[in-house]
Image (cartoon, rainbow, N blue to C red; front, side, top):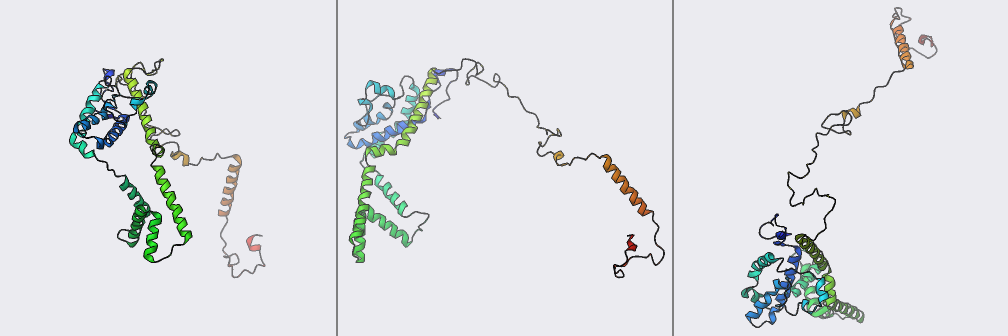
Length: 337
């Protein structure tokens, strides 16, 4: 939403949306200006142009005295008029004055004369699309022979048609076009013209603009809700879910204060700076509880080691050190076996 002028007064709810221009207003005003500019080529005097330019804003506020043939509001019945939404000069008086000032420099006689022509850029845009399809920028390099050939084909097909373009190529190369090739080009050319003529119909144009109309409907519903909120015709909760005050009247003093959280601590060691997953205690292995059997085994191992330590060293040559080279494997008494 774009807000014009000063911020709405919170004390006066009726002025809340007076200076608010929604997306619906922007889209409708742009469409009105486009329809009005198309009719300027048929105007013969400056006064007729100025009178037609007033319809840009007047049509938006449900005043159709200055509208031309493009306005459908004039032929609608009373039941059909109730289905459509328009701004009101009484309820949206400040918005009406502000829009008059904004659009004033675009509807002067000098600016209108620049639009009073029967030309458009549709043909230029269509040819640019053909060029981008036949010579995409990410595949065809500039100043190359391929680019020149592709642009030449686009110009020939757009001016002479598919059949005429290939006839010219075959004549320049001195080649004979067979009946099969001619039939294929003729079928393609007829399909191309059918597709172009179908795109010019009103049904095809409405289908192309379907997405824009859906967005306009959604923006119109938003504008209706804004008007209802301004007029006070909205439903509110009856059980005091909002604390007994409106959102615009609430301040930092009377709003409920959020409970501040302290420093997060670990659930295992109750220390700050980490959580349960990164706690250092999770990586420490638990100490096993010793049993009676384990204590007896340890005591037996200790007695055996003490017995080996108390044995005297051998002093004779017969009980000297063992050599693997002198042992033939026949005597095993030296091992105590």
